[in-house]
Image (cartoon, rainbow, N blue to C red):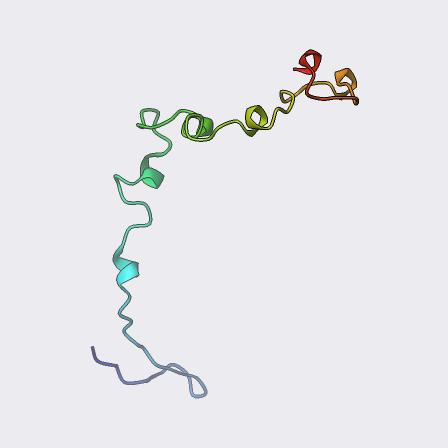
Length: 88
């Protein structure tokens, strides 16, 4: 690569043109087959909801620790013993 001679545009201002070797400038922002390029198309392979990927991978910690189900009304729980059968 070569640099060009400085070009004087005005008497007080000198600009120098420089050739920049930037390989990223040649890449498309969203290539045709990338997810970002096709995410608005209705037929994309993969889960329809974010939770479908993780439902089978992660166990429910509430079952392992004998906690009440999520959404249980706290007023229905017994402060005496949360592990009693009536509090499941």
